[in-house]
Structures are given as structure tokens and as C-alpha cells.
Image 1 (tube, one colour):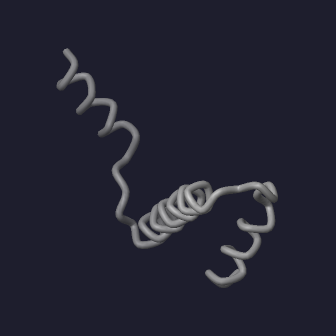
Image 2 (cartoon, rainbow, N blue to C red):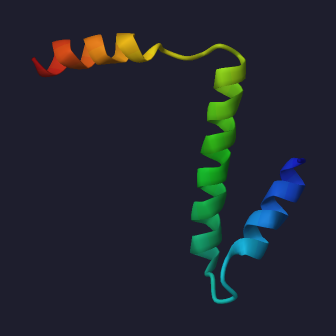
Length: 60
């Protein structure tokens, strides 16, 4: 799906009374999801076990 198609699908899924701010927020979320998917595909991830070790150290 192209970016344009994803945006059109998103806008069509919103209620008729959606404000510009509503649309901006949903576009922001869509952008962040796509960036996360690109990071996963590029291998820019941190293993769950490493995150849990870091959290235990920071919170412990």
C-alpha cells in the first residue's frame, strides 16, 4: 500500500465530524507505526531481554 493509499484509508475511516487536529493526530500515529516497521526491517531493534535487564538496573 502506498503512503497516499494509507492516508486516504485512514481519513475515510474517521468519523465525518473529525477535526483537522484529529486527522493530524492519526497521521502522526500512522507515521510513527511506519517508522517502527522500517526500523524492524532494518534490524534497528533492541532484544526484549536487553530491555528488561536495563529496566531492572534503572528501577532497581
